Image (cartoon, rainbow, N blue to C red; front, side, top):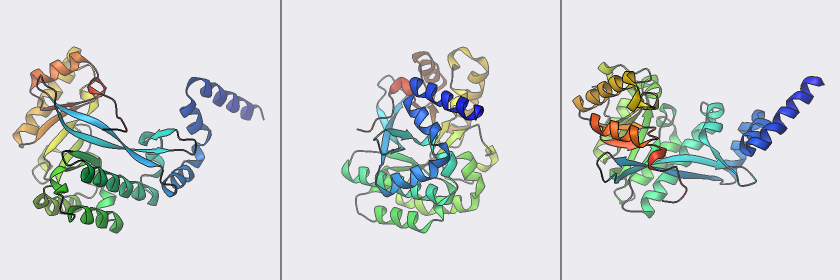
Length: 268
């Protein structure tokens, strides 16, 4: 009873600090139910995070579409709060399908939009997800030329033969591919030649405080060099300060993404 009382007191303290954290913590065991209800009620949407060019103009090169669900009270729930518990389940595949469908809708609505969405290896073999993609690509709106799939290093290596086959099928349709978290995962440089990545997103751990971190400076420069050697654009992810942005520009990175250039927004 004492432990229960202490846990309840801790949650009530959390509620005063961050209502969203409190709501998620108090219902942590029910996350799958929360996700299932949100999907069933159509409470999913994309938040758009800009990726900008690394020149002085910082023009938007494309947006990343980040999945958001909302609870029954309308509070937005970032993917980080629910994906770890459902990503390997059927609910994870449903989320991937919804994310793709929402992205295709936005591409149809905004002819000048270029948009990336996250793709896991499990989705490639999912029939409903593939049918959603094929319908979108056959719509006649040249959606493939403006669609980018972001694949993590872990996911790319998990089923690398399936991923490579899928990429070879999509390449003639104009679909682009980004390697997410470059440098922090399982992929070896020798495997880069086998894939069809158009760009890499350098992992945030190498970007944080780079203007004052000699180790990160050397590592990021090496990753940019590797990307360019394989004719891929290099995107620095997680840029939060003007100092980081300026230093990365000096290293020759192609694009920048992070809160320094804007937070994810529900409206374009």
